[in-house]
Length: 82
Image (cartoon, rainbow, N blue to C red):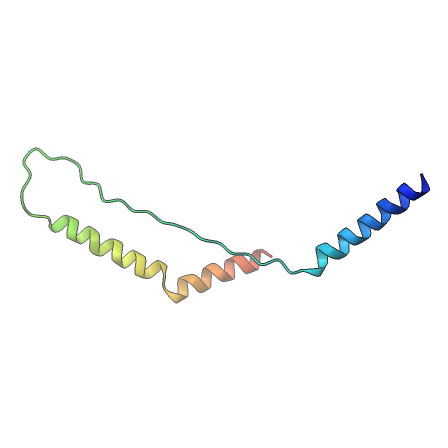
């Protein structure tokens, strides 16, 4: 019984030391998917200006989301939680 208690005590001590010995390294990834879907219309025309505007909008959003200020704010939000 005494040996079991001593083994349990040593296991708890070593678990606490091991848990605090290493700083955790976090890595996160995300994916934003925007799909272009136009509703069907009765009389289609060859004017695809709306789709080009949508492509320009998506390109602008991708540029904004991958910009340094947005990434720095995301990092600050993550690190402030700790």
